[in-house]
Length: 398
Image (cartoon, rainbow, N blue to C red; front, side, top):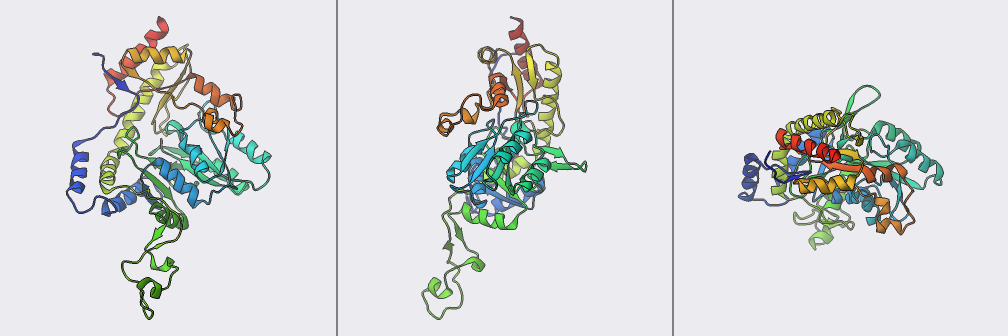
């Protein structure tokens, strides 16, 4: 094939997407309009949750989730080191303490046994929550984590940024979609361009808990509410007329310190349009994954790979290889821009100041030294994928 640049991830903007955004741009609302509510309702239906709250990005979704779950300087929260930094940083935004757990070397997901050991060794009642990550698009078995969390009175945040449409099968043989709210207290998603659904930037929080949902709505908009049932000030103070018995329509109350983490209507329009073809994109990702899995099966240079799993959402397709740096550099000379996901969070200089060090999590660190994320996006052509596979084979034959 003719050589050209092949990134590890890439958005696809269709004519329908452009028309949906244009309709909002020429309408009455650019932000805080009706398109956001429609996107929230349709996304909740897609994942199977009761409520959904659209926000400005996935990091904002994590931050607001921690706030809604009362993370504070007295909180200790467990998460995985193999994730984007935001999965841990959200705890620090609320002055909480991050406790890392190792990964399962076969799935690359946070390891249940490692989490259990932490909970057993920490003073009773000091660990408040667990942030699990559906890394690369593979769903964490939240049923097992829910049982453990309940034993230690912990909440669960599911970071499902990689996994819309992914699922695990529970003990009753029922498929449980990522973000459906049946086991996690809240779940969060990202609409960054390389994700399944692109809004430019954007995020979503899903939950089945009405109290958490109401608080998220308030925190998303500066801690302000317009709900008269929640008002603290008297109608008289609100109107400036002592005898007033009603709140004026303009009145609103800031009841706590929140943020401007809102999504715009035109981003929501793009998200709504992309959501309509989410299943088609997911099916294409799984086809690409199956072809990678077959191509690399039995190769001597492969020590692990994502493999094929019809429950996997395949934001990433990861291979573990010998001479990872050499392969990475070689592929770049061939126009193939593979990526690394992720440098272990506990070894970032920021987290090392809290005492984390090399050797703390051997499975995570071994994975990092071998991992490479290959091109994975619905518009990747068969010829492009053939080229990627052939160049990887060629490198190890040199």
